[in-house]
Image (cartoon, rainbow, N blue to C red; front, side, top):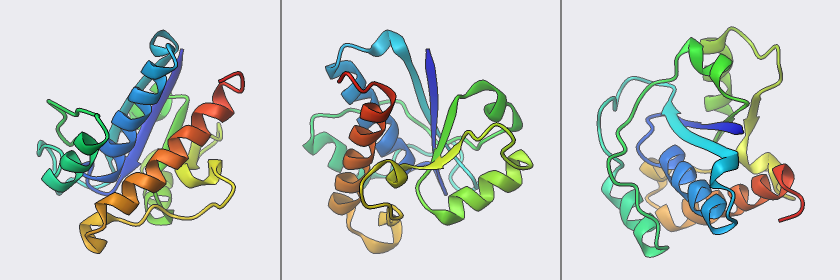
Length: 152
């Protein structure tokens, strides 16, 4: 089983969008038994809050539900418990390195590094562009799945 943790600043926009988009892609490919997928934050600002309504609405436009998801913060145990810990931008990566005390096993990555054109996933909390964030996240998740399961 491949265990993936998606991470962003607050765990109310980008990382839950990635979590549930990836879960849908994995389900559509019939690979649910092969993956465990969750998301978390690097900050504590939004702990316990649900997915931000515009992010939830963008997922719904693509037939993806995120019912029951609430924000949580990364913990030291996450480094041990996950095979891949995937951030959305450089700030997320720096915060993860600090929280985990480094990356001795090479588990930390950026989502868009799996695509032909690596770039950060812009935070729609600031840009207001949830459609663009989902497009990048969808592209990144598809590329990640292809990298992990080349036969797909």
